[in-house]
Image 1 (cartoon, rainbow, N blue to C red):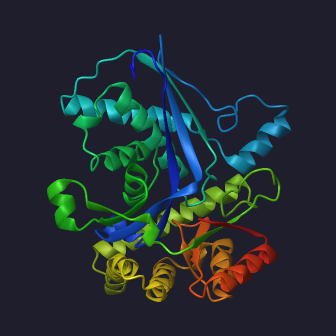
Image 2 (cartoon, rainbow, N blue to C red):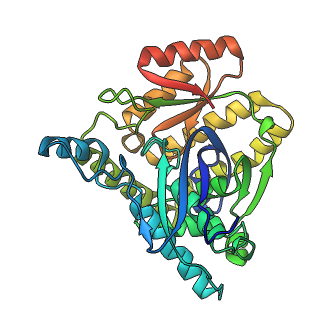
Length: 361
């Protein structure tokens, strides 16, 4: 493919944090995998001028009426994917400049599409950024000059440009794809600037289910964020509260709070045990680890931050004996039925009765 004349397109899937979150920002460990159900794609087309093309739905700027505009903002917020594409262009350019990587090539048009539910804890923003980064790597033919271990940092830095608070776990899973074990130990992060990332065979995973809430006001969409029934202003308040509590937990961790430190260390050890359990096909043990991960997060952050609807999804799964935890910080839940198909059927029935969408992942 000649990058000067041909379009380049990359697709990156959503991800599920299976064990270890949120210890990735506390020098911990994680196991995550990419999710085939949802994806984001970015297309780079060489052009005379550099253009970031808005999405016809996610970056909507034309409305039927003032009421339509306000309703859209109440349900979707103000931001689409254009700012993500602009941010990754800036971070990519600056990294190449700082590392003396010469960028030979003309201008281009970047466009994107996605079916990842917004604010669902499935890393929709980072999927767009990661797909765009892949396009830039190929367009400028510099993939061999930017190590795969470094690329998650670039994706995260682009999101930090926009004030998105997150860790490396999601970006590692999306850069590598498949099932990945990650170690973010302090000595690795300090010495290397990144963790140690080990791909695992995806067939080590048992059958898993994804649970999320469907938008009652727009049933034609696949799904949306956990706070789908709230107005945008209320969602912003919840986000502010979550950031405050995250900051509080981090401050307590930095200040040597014994409960936070011991709890986060236990969370960080779960992927170590989980990796061994997967390799030994010990799925009963793995189910216990999933549940423990959620319980520890709940104890550290509290129910107000986790949110009533998020808690309800976990409770519905546990009501039939399934293991369950958040896929990220909330919005969707990953569940495992250690007792097999009959239990999975009960889980499906319980989710449908509660009004949740459930899909095999």
